[in-house]
Structures are given as C-alpha cells and as structure tokens.
Length: 229
Figure 1 (cartoon, rainbow, N blue to C red):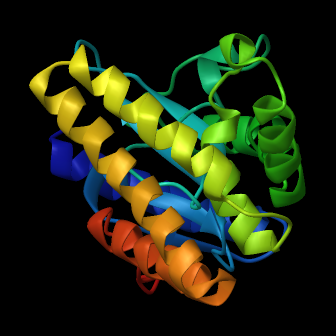
Figure 2: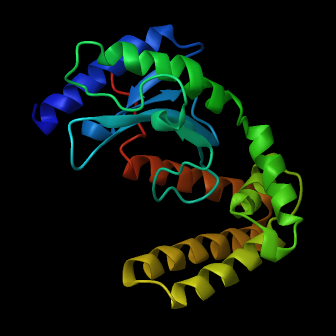
Figure 3: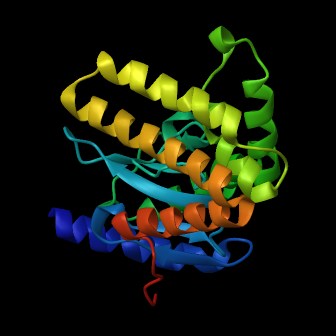
C-alpha cells in the first residue's frame, strides 16, 4: 500500500468512527496527518491521530489534548496516550488489515477517550498554576502554558511566568542545535510579545493576540478548516 493509499484508508477509518464518538467531532487535516478533533476547537484541541512506523507496515494510533495557549510547533503527548501504552488491546495497527477499523475503534473508545476526558481545560490551567508554584528545579513543562491560561481565564497577570519563560527559552537556545535554538527563540518571542501586549493594552488585547496566534498555528498545521466528510 502506498503512502497515499494508507492516508486514504486512515481518513476512511476516521470518517466511519466519528458517528460513534460522544459529542461533535470533525475530520481535519490532510494526508497521513489527518486527525479527528472534538468540536468546537477552543483553547485545547482534543485529537485522535496516526503515526506510521518508518521500518514496518504497522503504526500507532494516539489520542490526546493539545493546549492552544502556547505555540503549536508539534503534537505533544504530555496529555495523550499511544495505543502501545495500553496493556490490553492491540499495540499497533496495520491499516491494510481487514480489522484495522475495529482495532482503532477499540483503542479510541477505551483508553483514548478516557485520556482525553481526563484533561479538561480547567485541569490544564490548574496543573499549570500548581507546577509554577513549585521550586523551579522541580517544575515540569505544565507551567509553560500558564501565561496563556491566565489571560484566557482572566485569573491573574501573565507577566511573571512570561518573563521567566523568555529567560528560560533564551538560555536553552544557547546550548541547542540550530533548529532547536530557532524554535526556542521563537517561543521566547511569543512570551515576550504576550507580556508586552498585556502591559501596553491589557487583557482584551492579550486575548486577541492569543486568538490570532492560535488561528495562525492551526492554519500552519492545516487544521483551520473542517473538510466535509
């Protein structure tokens, strides 16, 4: 099966799966990067996607939540699960197989939705606040969302965590590869601009900045529109 054939097969599986999911879901994206997304897409994107193996016919289905209050540079699995992390059920799926659709459905309706439902936006924001309250040496990456969540929810100023993230990103860029350094410097610029907009014009302007950035990121990932299924 060619890559194009596999992409079409994957899209067909998602299209058939969509009516069986609770709530409103859409097929978004193109080619092998096609995903199911829960609607409406707001500040966290619930998604179901597929990643092919570079060495064999099988691949993996994943499900998770993508925060959109930070730059969308790649799919993150911090708030997601891949099918081979589940003890029961298929660990991989061959899209050529006759039962591929059933294997995908088994994973998504079980562990996939369970993981997605465990990360509502309220929990994402709360975990970001609690992570930031830790000693900096014990923090994980949850707090990287905190400036955005504070703006979206109107809970506090984003300035302090944004300033710390500008410094952190620039420090890490110094010891990174050229590509990694560029990405980190772009993230630093994002937090710096968010801080500036907040200081200059307040929350409404900061929220508009985040909204426009979210739309740009979704467009870059070819996820801004919902193709007819």
